[in-house]
Length: 333
Image (cartoon, rainbow, N blue to C red):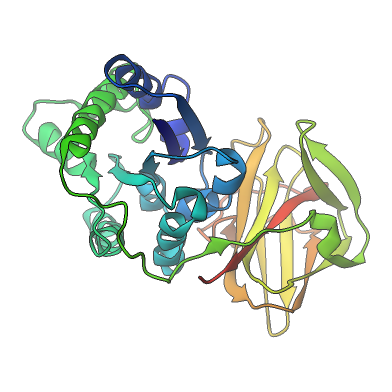
């Protein structure tokens, strides 16, 4: 039995629930491999474009999907949320897997925001016969009744303490056992054809038809093109649409500018976590259709109205360059 974790920072953090849960599963079931497909801060839309790379040729029997808590915080723009989630469950790498969405808790979200994201998630999953595990509501009830303390579970209102990780792991494991014992088979349901299914792409430089850039590698493995300040590159969509860019967020990055036909946008990639270089996604305010060209520039501005995921930006930095790993290219299946 191969198990894959698709998720964001609460799953990828050190000493996460994932470690304890994997141990519990290994002790009680025959499991051959645990596949880690988790990256912090990029939500369901961002992580959907890494599933193919992380899973590779591995067969996935069980997929724990943990993107709810990041999307509660705005990691995926609401207008793209349904397509992002549908794209994950439609991904060919997860075709025959049992998907278990996990709604984790955070204590810094207003009820209105919770209701909005919760409704969208449920609309997607329940309509295709997938039953989520709603830890959020369970923890909220425990905290309200005084049976649990949010500060003992979460050290920053989102990420787990060691106690919180253990608490989550045992709750998820209990649900996992029930799901395996269930006689219903939800692995053969018909999934709706309404999702961002990542397209298979060549190297990023093959889609650069004009401009000045240099090549580099992130952590010696991941190729990227680098645009220095005041320079730009023109990228072209092939037979796919594009909803954003995968970039490197580090101490050298700053504001990126996107120009496409009748619209443009700027986004500040730099944030308070850029001391440690990481993967980030720049999400476009509109989808760029197939067989189009658009310009990407390393701006000489030190600030932008929005951050990388279209949320309001409060960070200021004049960047030295922009490093682009790939386009967030998709085909609607």
